[in-house]
Image 1 (cartoon, rainbow, N blue to C red):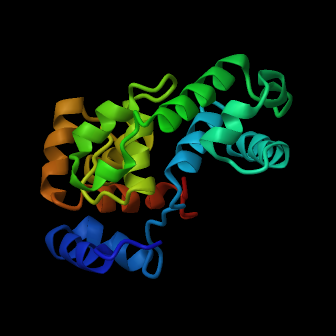
Image 2: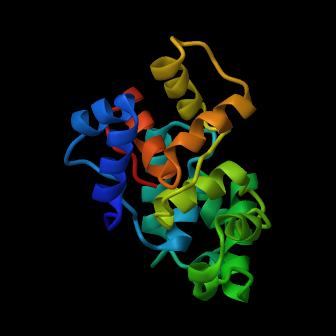
Length: 205
């Protein structure tokens, strides 16, 4: 799924910011893409924490082979030993099970997300063990395609802003926040382009 706002957002960013104009031209034809399923997206984010992309993909494939479907019910019906056997640490098994419990019990309000703010969804998600603010922000960008998320603690974003706007000098958190104001209401889109400037291969979570 490609955001319906992408072309308009890219055009507005390009008109307002020469750096963005160059990046929009450089990555024409590419865009943010969502995997769609909230539980699967969040489960993948837990699996991938603090390990390489290659290792995470290997574990995810083994999980897919071990579970009939990646659903909250399938996770809760699985023995911890089965999940550990796929390559998950004991801690990540706990996180995955807690995520499944939150979905299964209705503590995650999918039906209300359309009317909830970014901050409200972040609060809801960070109540799950193993999901911090950064993971919740990635989910809002890649899972919900929210257009104006600005993940201040993301290393890639920090590096790209320093590279393109400050000759490599890193910014303090408040300085980065101030820079981001120029990209409202499309800070997710600006962040995506800045990420791509460091790694041309589009990321999907």
